[in-house]
Image 1 (cartoon, rainbow over the protein chains, first blue to last red):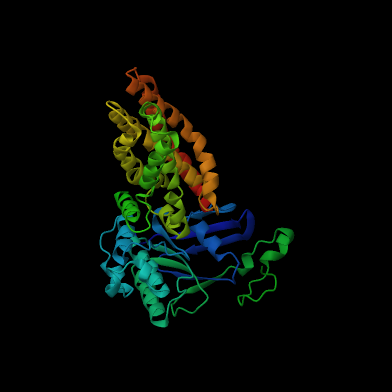
Image 2: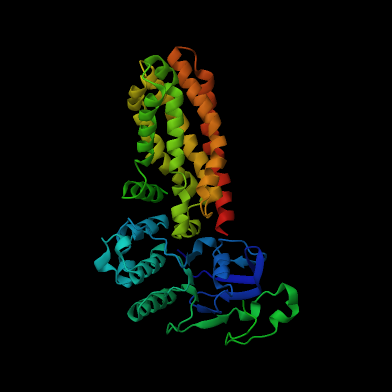
Length: 217
Length: 218
């Protein structure tokens, strides 16, 4: 797998339920870069990530990337309750043509849990398993939607380590999160790109990054 | 793709996976009909192909909404859609997995359940052949219906209404082929029609279902 893939959004307009919620979004995610996606709840982070992952088409603009280089980590972990930790990971590994799940198991401290059905995992353990899936995809660009939900502090550190190792290999990550991961990362605030069909001229003027505009939905 | 097939089979076999549900339903239908119709062997033998076919069709319908709904709910479908497997391939594999855990067991069991319906002589082999050729279409058409309604709350009812009319040609030709075959007539025409429906479904519907999934994942 070529680990030097980049992802570019060009004047992207994304919609949720047919209504534009972000417009003229442009940025580039370069190899080795971590970009933190900031924005209040309901501002369109998930929609943007799903569009970038190719799960929904943009209304305007385009996403320049090879779909084979991108993997998406959603709120839902995509785990099967009746399969064991090992079986879940092994499945995603085989789907992506990988064989070795050991680094993923060790990287997220799942070694003692490999034979446990994922139905019997705690919320945090499930989340760790969901994140371990990212490693077995072998893909360079991670699009993550609030990856640290239900993780405790040591697990967040494990996740940050995994991202650091991934970036050191030339991978990149776009992470929507509200907490400080302690990563060396650039921040990308989607606030200024909020689509406002009624008053489109005013929607692109502000670049305030504190996210307290009253105009948010 | 093999990994996906193995996973779906494994999920079906595990607790709560739905394997055996169709078979049990089929057995119930076939057991109840003689009580309702009466023990007249001649009547039972005459209606046997139709009852077995209707039973198989309903048993198949019972498990259709599992094909995509569970994967949709736990997020696996999003992840599969971004995986290297094309969505058309995912649909085809999931329909195949559905057939292997419902259609194939029904086909294998039909001759035995046929005994409850006073099926005789060549009837057993005719039921086996027609179901073997016809049930793949039921799974494939069902996967299409499931793809159309995935993500809808209580989508099962809508899916049944969408899918049942599409099942009717397979049912007519399948039951007709079995009836004619048992009576000693030439059954080539309905048999070929049914095989044609199956082949057409397998060739075309993965593409239609994949398009439906793309729309529903938005």
